[in-house]
Image (cartoon, rainbow, N blue to C red; front, side):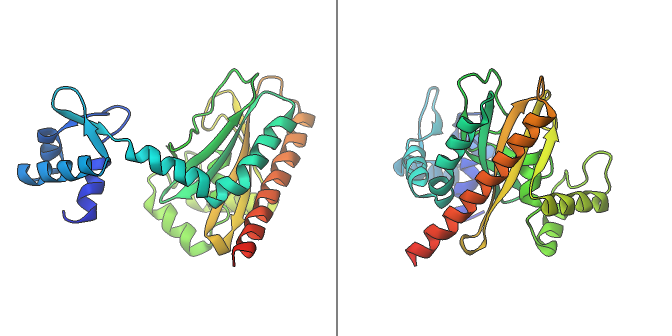
Length: 252
């Protein structure tokens, strides 16, 4: 292990379950020589990516906060979509959580969320949290936008490529139906008792494949309300796609 991959491997050790590490622990877990582990940690501390914690351990550093702020201000999807997401949540007139999510390697990542004050539930989709690629409306509506070759590669590489009760071919057909419809509705696939309604945000010229979603409690959700929220989600996602394209043309 050398170069950037070594630094990346060290940083990827830090999780919610294991937020701090000692140098010997890093060395043993990654099978790195002690001298290499100490040098790598020293350089990460110098750059602000790690900082000292209790008991001769280290935690993630403040440099991540600097870049988190920067990406919030410069990410074209956040710039084009967050205001639209806020307005969609406002127009829902029902307790809900709105989400902006994007494809990230072999997962889907939420990059922004917005909840009504009356929502007494939370979605498992949270900013920066990696979620399954083939489960839930937020993810499946993104997957449905991929071309055959890229879709096949992702389905082959993901462990959950064949959802329970479906063959890969059946799942492909379901994705085709989602793409044709222009939206996806899922019930309890990610969080029990919640309904997800998602529509795609696509800007090929920017390499953006994303989705806008509304998450609502299934209790008391009428067919009429679901249809209204589906139209709201689809129109909001289409507006975000248009904003992305317009923004890109202005920057040329």
